[in-house]
Image (cartoon, rainbow, N blue to C red; front, side, top):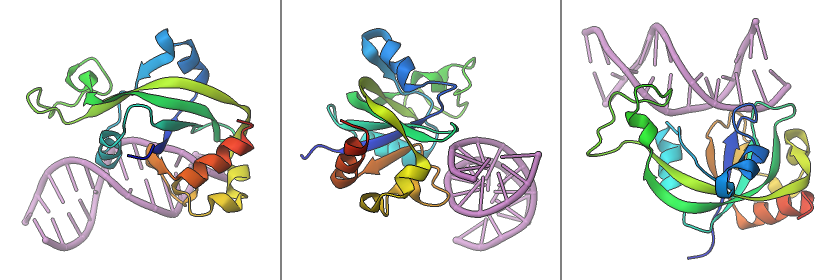
Length: 155
DNA sequence: GCCAACGTTGGC
DNA sequence: GCCAACGTTGGC
């Protein structure tokens, strides 16, 4: 199958791309996705797929670099941990409701690509991220969009 | 802080 | 199955 491209949102206050760079083996599990659409997309991720790392709730919100999928979807253990903010009382250990993937650090862009700048790009017209009210924290990115953004980011 | 654009929950 | 109420995300 052709390589797939994804966008993952993260609030830099919570977990930034540089946090990922500092993580053990530059890899982290992507826990806490509690939206079925986003979960279903994660299930389609394949090891080695490319990831666009996006900082939401930042000023400005911006695409800041790349990562990749290091492990395909498996049960998100936080759903069973009553102490976790991601705890889900309705999750059944026999049939986990939520899954996560592992994400490995890639490269930072030479500069952050702010949302206003991304909106100006003709090549990115129709991109899910740029849709009004776009909230999904996991999104597909087309190969064309991926190439356009990497070029903008100096990679 | 406001609000648009959702998704979820639960009564009926 | 419908829909009102409510909660969340995230840009502005």
